Length: 423
Image (cartoon, rainbow, N blue to C red; front, side, top):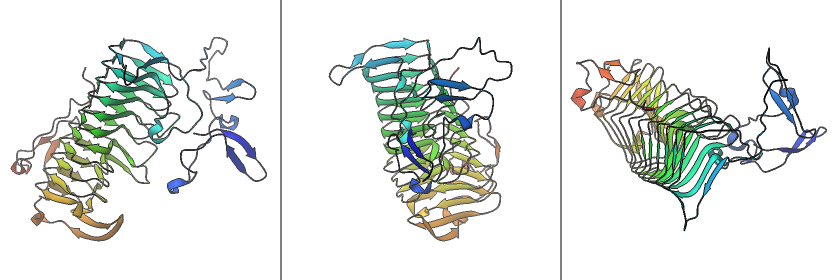
């Protein structure tokens, strides 16, 4: 997001008011959006801010009486700020049961994940602080942006934000039972829930209607468990329902991710371990309706075990520039073909049920990112290429026919029906 300081109509040149995060057209993406121009008013309910005249132009919806309308114009970035220091952290503060709304952001690029902006609630260098049962709605930046030790963010609803929903980075923090939706309305690179640090827990959150990644986490020994995620990655690509970058010893367990559509480019995934993710465990998760349930890039020594991945079309499990993977006791069911990209990254590939209704279970060898050969997996690969006889899965409880081969391979039943907010 950048402002415009000048427009030359002769040379067709726009001059930015501030630097962009990347040069226009970087990475081959030649897309842009022009916001806040009067010509953009195309239907009732839209508005335009004329900064030069100091006026707002609004197109009312049918039957709306503007003599009775309330208009809120935000002038601050944060409503509540709790600020400590490394030597003197802010301690033992609880904020409970209030609604916060109407903040703004400066007109500038937000950086990766639109993480640059402040939150309606901003907490820095805090200890033993709690945010409980808050509703944060219609804010220009983040809903909650927090850092510190032993923080708790629980049972909050954060929605209709310009940037991220909740960002919490620290040690021994818990972010649980929150409802995050309709985020990134101004900055589509926004991440709904971002964590990091050490020994933190992100659990039982329900996240949906996001333009980019639903959950992003790195750090060390963090757990991402029992989250319900759907309708993520609606605008951008190269992200996932759960996207981990530079994580060591992360655990992704018991999550239910469904209905993420691939919008092209570098694709959209359910579970994504990216650069420098090591010694991580992806176990007991379910994905439904996602063409790339597992994507792994420049990662190593990770384990993908006892997951169920179900696709209405093709299913791709990808491992470019990765190594030393264990992939065992998973079920991959695809109505199209199943493709494993860069099988050389997998040290142990055994006791999986890989079933393609088209009868194609293909391994594609890669040299860097280019395909260098293909071959068909067969029954001698240590895996079974037969129907797993899944009877039910849509509600999160995966049930097998008694004749299913899953039990013979030691694949444990999966029940993620409790993923998401606990009532």
